[in-house]
Length: 510
Figure 1 (tube, rainbow, N blue to C red):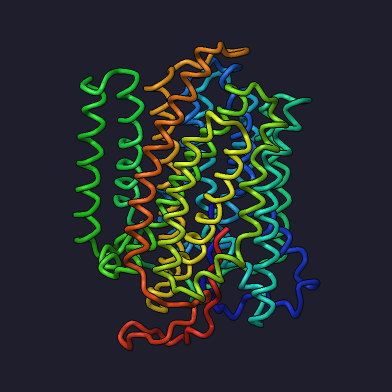
Figure 2 (cartoon, rainbow, N blue to C red):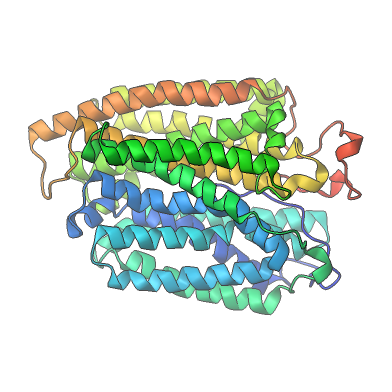
């Protein structure tokens, strides 16, 4: 989950506002677009056990209900940004909102887990058309740097409010309405945002758009790589690790990855310039971001099952149980910036990686020792998450040439979404292997609860090692910069654009 600011286009046709009050219509509309994207995952996550019972779904199905959205969203972010640079940012955003709202209404026709997974994949595609654009259009509304930062603060607050309120609103709503309405509510929000953007945000000037061709083969290959890799995990559980389908998925994922790398290196207009990864900061920040998202997605998916199945809590109580994680996410920003200023990016992120490993180890121990132990681990984990997410977003964009900052923000978001897909796939697969592939309705037996606790202990123990290594390695390649804003001390002359870097805005991660 992230938002990173990009350098806004400077079109002469852009509608510039003198204050936030004057821009309230387009600003509110863009905030709503961001809100609906942020709240969608948390609203539905709290309903996973209910969905599992209603649609007779197992853990792997529920894994894909969550993972399908992240898979298409993360896989298409770079492509969506490329399309927006060619067709117009406002136009692509409005198309995304229209598709998102329409698909949200179609949930009333869903009668199986497969149909819901397909719908979630479509919503991920629509969200990918929205995410890279909302932030850049917010900054386009103003030509004053202070106003741009105040507008971004408003947007971050709205987005995080959606993330905080999602489980609580979803849990409360489930006590009175069916889970389908948690998606239906997105439709009117998307419609209001569409109208506000149509009225208040100027269309892109043709001179601000590029005519380079799209890298459609690269987009297809990236989605194939991630999708087949995740499918191989679930197929191994259901059909055996030596089954023909599983082996075919593994071979296909490896083949697609190799083909993707080869294509991106040889095509004239690559979706992702792989040469960027020769920069240790770019490479390390992306890897560390993926590590944090693996941890966050795995824990949120696992704890939803833990609270509602193993503990037998209601969706409302389960939503409240996530408050330590969410509140810490809101309040930890000063601590994260303090670590960066005192120790520099490398050391601060290595400390954060250690916190992630310790917290996952604590989670492994805490599943047998009650909610308080889990809550403490959630707080420690979130401090680590917030620190890496903030610092690495800034470091990654700082390391990019001034004329490539949009690629940096898209790469940041993509790394996080890939990590989310992997984290959800790993925890769902391990629980299915260690516990059960079918989630029985009603109260669980004592033996099944104990088996589930054992599966969680092993899962979080493995994740503590994996996340610690991945995030720690990424942190190790960062510099000792103490910046918490995008103001690098020096810039290679050959990479600088005509636009001064002082005009760039801080990258913020939520």
